[in-house]
View 1 (tube, rainbow, N blue to C red):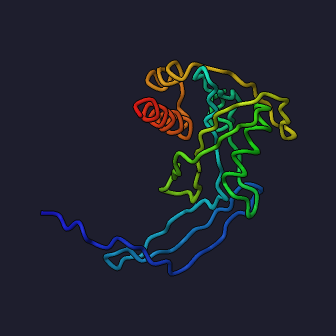
View 2 (tube, one colour):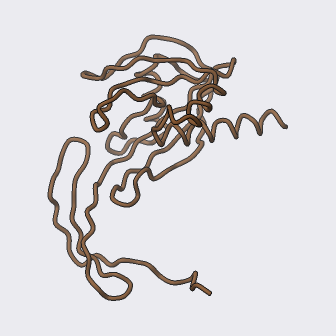
Length: 187
């Protein structure tokens, strides 16, 4: 029988900061493993972000299409952004909804908090559901290029199933939003 109570903590014995950029930092940590050996861990430090599943009264979800250089392709994603220093994730989600889509919401509620790449990155993403939408003018950041596209929620979920939507925060957000909305219909 495996020992499920085993402690897997890794003690940091040294750290070297390798890079500081506009969006993240890179550190190399020397750690002591649970068995006493030493190992290296490369860590990307990121301030985190927030995203929003904006759903209108007809259950259309609003996704943004933008080019993502690491993949050299356009992706469909939830409106999202990086947290400013000291910024609350709810404030970030609210700001990004308006900046990227021009929308405001009567209600914004927390759906989930996820760690997108815990093997090497400290980024934490908070995901919110926005309802009671009002439409206005977007105000994109300098150098930000995207377009907004409404999809029936069921179609967006089918796109997840077919592998057409691959962005992790968007997959989690759509699935959580569907579950919350289904639970509301049942009560």
